[in-house]
Length: 432
Image (tube, rainbow, N blue to C red; front, side, top):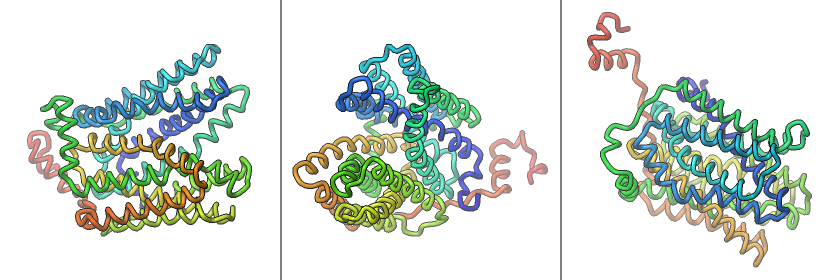
């Protein structure tokens, strides 16, 4: 608790622990869906259709999801979206167990999951800032990132192991995912409902979305932070999709070697998130993120141009540590800089930036075919370092960022405020 003080706050602790099964279920869902699609058709493009079914709603509704998070109760949105995921997982289980599953079924269910996820993520991210005290926001966001990275490491191999067991198989995995979603819904009932933001219903939905975009444009630091969140998605994260090429053509290792590379990256990502979570205070977070972004680009370049598998393993762990630390700090700064009234809309734009990942995958894959994969990723890493350095140096507002380490109110302060608001309910003499 001394290292991760955010867990001392009950509502955040309930949210964090309760959401872990849902995040794990989502990682298992993405893996299982791809596996099942390839098993049904024997064609890699079927996996693309499933991914498109999940990704199109994110493009179409992400801004609406942010507006909803700012206008309505975040807890209610989380319960509705998680229930939708639960129903979708049960539908998949029923289709698989009855042996009538087809690709078009999977695309439709993926659309439902993608739509629910689009409303779920902005509400969950902004709910964290609503539950936690300002002094522990860095710790809370980093812990959330650590949980997601841990599930990303555990989810796919766990799903693969369960599929290999005859008494579970693919249908059983979908049932397990539905049960995990049900656990999340039940855990949300233990958290007090904060209701909607004050004044959130004063504008129409379209007006609220436009207002959110204007707010982002009016904040130079926030605008730079969002740009710096999309840069690694286009120039850094596509390395995940190119890892099989590195394993085969650069390092000459088989599936086991590829698995170790991915594991090294995942373990590094968890370590990086926990490292950010354990930091109690950062005086110049913008400068720290600037350093991490440049280091991420250089680490990618070193990995790309090395020919030793052992050095590659070490560099993939470093890439995981630095990238996770960078993204965790970036998300925390975005939340800290933003006005609470706009948290949902800002996080929806942040989520929207992840829609650029397929574009980055496509661009780097095309260049890897035309040139070599080492040259492509190496140059991409150097470009990433240059972009982060350029925007960081050109933005004084970004470099001068400071966290809002507001001190938590004492018991006397809380009691005094309560006495002023409700003097009839709490006589002064009973206040500690």
